[in-house]
Image 1: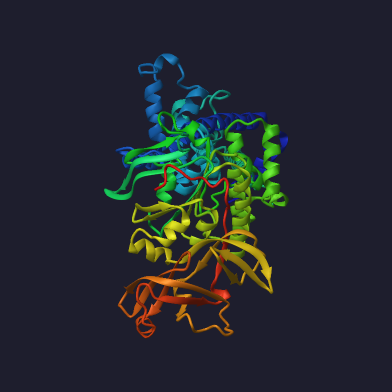
Image 2: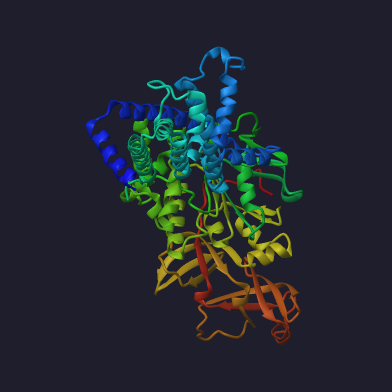
Amino acid sequence: METIIEGVREAFRLLLRGDSEVYSTAARSIVISGLATVIGLAAGGALGMFLGLQSFPGRGLVLALVNTGMALPPVVVGLVVFLLLSREGPAGRLGLLFTPAAMVIAQAVLVTPIVAGLTATGVQAIRPQLRWQILALGASRWQYAWLLLREARLTFMAAAMLAFGMAIHEVGASLMVGGNIQGETRVLTTSIVLETMRGNFETAIALSFVLLGLMYLTILGLTLVQQRRPAP
Amino acid sequence: MTPPKLAVRGLALARGGRLILEVPELAVQAGEVLAVVGPNGAGKSALIRVLALLERPTRGEVLMDGRPVTGPLLPYRRRMAVVFQEPLLLDTTVEGNVRAGLALRGVPRREQERRTARWLERLGIAHLARRSVRHLSGGEAQRVSLARALVLEPEVLLLDEPFAALDAPTHRELLGELEGVLRETATTVVFVTHDRSDALRLGHRLAVLMGGRLRQVGPPEEVFSQPADPEVATFLGVENVLPGQALGREGGLTVVEVGAHRLQAVTEERLEGPVWVCVRPEHLVLGPVYQGEGPSSARNRVPGVVRRLNPLGMGDQVRADLDCGFPLVAYITAQAAEELELRPGSPVVATFKASTVHLIPREGGPGRPEGPGGR
């Protein structure tokens, strides 16, 4: 119990002192997971629109695959990306293993199915009559997709939040493809694991506070955008 | 001869292996308002979707200006506008909705604003412009939907029961406003409705769709007076629908001229000019000519000659077709026909109260398209 209280105290001290190590790790977390989320939104959004709007043989199978992918185990993704990027792997020549780019890729793979699954659900929830109306208004293919995405924006923003949350809190994949190299690929979650194993509970708790705080702030921002309404 | 603005040929639409629409031929002339009536499930909405190029027919083709619609549909769709029964608004402001079609067409922003403002004003929703569509009443929402279509100044306007979900006063108001707009523009319109009086009010021609098949197409008075088959007759309620001329008020009643006769009608509003005069056959009272010369509460007396007598339904009623200078149909009991000794050729007087005469404004005289496409 004492450890915890002391840990909380130390945590605040670290934060208030402006420990550069803590802040740079946090910044790295935001950039890597933010990029992964943006990629996931683009890829997952497109895939989700396609799955939600097109009918083709085997669509059910693909949707089930995507829905399974919404709960992909990070360590499995980490392993696959590791093998792809490792020196002998098919993308080994890029030399991306143990770089932030590898972490972005792994996290993007992790969140894409989440965005795709939710986007598909969102656009499918739009009534077919409204889809007809949008086409009848003279929308081209791309305009149609854009307007439908706008109609499904509540769901899409929920997907964005979930994706960012997933990317920033995941540890398995980041550890495996990033390597937790200080000053390069060390992010909040991998740091917490490391400090805990070293017995530096105060630092671990401080980092956990930062992680939770960041998640809350980011998601608060996205929620405000999501709940934004046109003037009454 | 100019080809019809919009037409279908050899159209068949199947869903789940079942044929839901089969229209060998239907054409709408430029500037014409074709009213399509039919009961629920007749295929009216499916017809609109095919015409709007939203649904590909199983067989057959849609023609615009006499040429089959082929290739990319977008250029064709951008010459049309559709208003559905539900407002189907985008989740944004009123103004955003009315402007949507213009924005999709890449109309310059300045012009978008100008045209949007004009139509918001025209449909009485300018004060709602910045309002979210989530807080609109049903009538307001449908005004937005109508403005969103009209702002495009489409060559073809397709209306799929646009007023069916509205309460009666709103329905009347919007119908009147639409009528005004259509009178000013040369828009070609297909107006689907199950409301016969709406169809009469807007339609230059009437098409009856039942069970996915086109049963009859023609001028309204013809369709009503000579229904193609008993089902059509039943659906239409076989009203006597006669072209007349409202002459204005006289002692609180509207006087209307039909053929050589002057009839009186109770109307809410003042009416003048061309009208449809509707009297239900069961509201006519037949009597011998010598009777009823004295005062009566029935304001209208029309002498005529019996042309035909046909038993109706179970045979306890008789349908009498009269010639009064114009055709008139009356339903009377079999006993009454017996007692009056009605035979083809018998002279009779038809009387009916002013309150049973229903007047519907009619687009009059010139500009009423006649000609090909309709049969």
